Length: 298
Image (tube, helix red, strand yellow):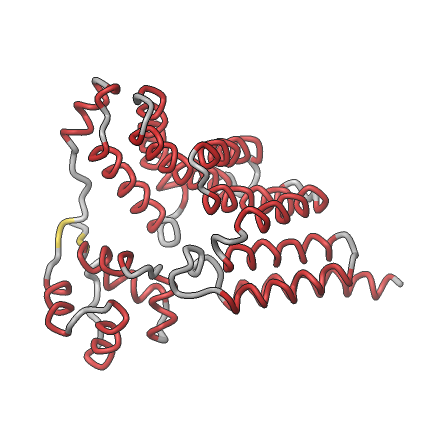
């Protein structure tokens, strides 16, 4: 039976850390944080004081979180079953449960093959969309739009990965749905995230750097004022698109501006865990390869 440390994971999210960010603070691998939260291993004694400080808890509170291990087997939610039978009765409690389900699936994304997550994610996304369509106007419907933006983005990622980046049409349809939902509630971060994912499809799936450039620029504009890290990531892909188009100066300018944005990002930035130094090196190297090819040809 799979196990988990639910309180530990919840506390990490409460202080605004992704698994990647917490690992960076502690100087360890992200997979180590995942193993702690799945109750597969325990933090070594010398790491525990630093972990407690990062989570803003006392050593005793941390010990309680580590001792509290639960079954990770999904449990049937009777309230959700009732609401699905009478969708106009959907309320904030059910919406919060669906948001937690989506967040749990998002956290699984980095450690579970996409093909294995598709069924559960598809079911959850379908439930969110169905209830949103039937919800009375007001706060509940707005909250469901926000959850739908996240679940649609996740579905786009999963479909693209599981199809080995071949099913561009379905992937883009999910990202478009995410953008539409995000705009309903003026969620700039969710909209920018989906726009950025669309730029990936244009750059790496369709091999269309012109469209990729426009989409990455749009993501950077939308994320401005919301997430410097997401702006920086978008600008890195703006630079890569310019490199594909053999536009050296524009590429260098975008990469430089991206670095400035990363410098402005703080631990509370919602995209702080989206991008790692390895990702930065990979994209910078890709730009140099494209521009290097131009130098050789000239």
